[in-house]
Length: 313
Image (cartoon, rainbow, N blue to C red; front, side):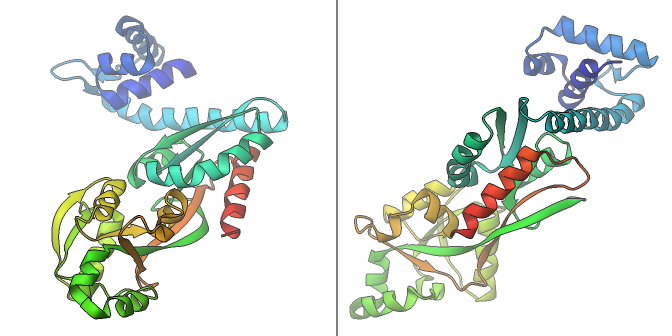
């Protein structure tokens, strides 16, 4: 039994298909089958049922859990040895959502790479469930996401609380308030009363998204019934449609500050950005890791840089 056979075994166990697993590993099906057969021979047991469907045997199920621990321990000791022998090449893997990565990494990675030129950084982009799962399995060293993170041994470092903004085409404010438009606008610049816009069309993220869940709870709590005419999984899409005047939407402050830093002051866009009350929050942005795993010096330095970035804001 060797590490390579174990790592190949885990890919086959995830895919439960030799062809797809071989494609992921960039090797032939014959070569992959040979590695699995060698592993089965060394253990003296069958790890996969070949018929009627390709599936894990009970021995295979037990080995999946053990193999993950073995390979994780191997990676931890390699990381520790690399820290002992400072100056050697090492790796840092970070899990983050696509949009959040766009807003954070450009401000962090240049400084980190300057201080750690020999560290190879890889980024896994996915939704909250995917990046948390990757951390639990040891595929990434750190994750950047929104609290709470439901993992055992998860060490959380809070960065910033992210408010939500009501993004509404100005034509709707004119229609609703008429001559009192500017008075309403000044008032809502402090805190919006979204019930005033209950009759306008809304373009929102699809149900199940964190922002959508929060705003739906806000609508229910305040007995606001809205007309949702369009839903998307892409937060950039709903903002673009609001800017074009299709409807009102809801957008996190962090994305506005990092991805669209001048938009709120840009008079070209005929939209207003009104903050919700502070208790209507997208949540708290955190960076975190598992405290039962070895944390490399590179990972510690990355955390310091991220923390210093948010202290300045």
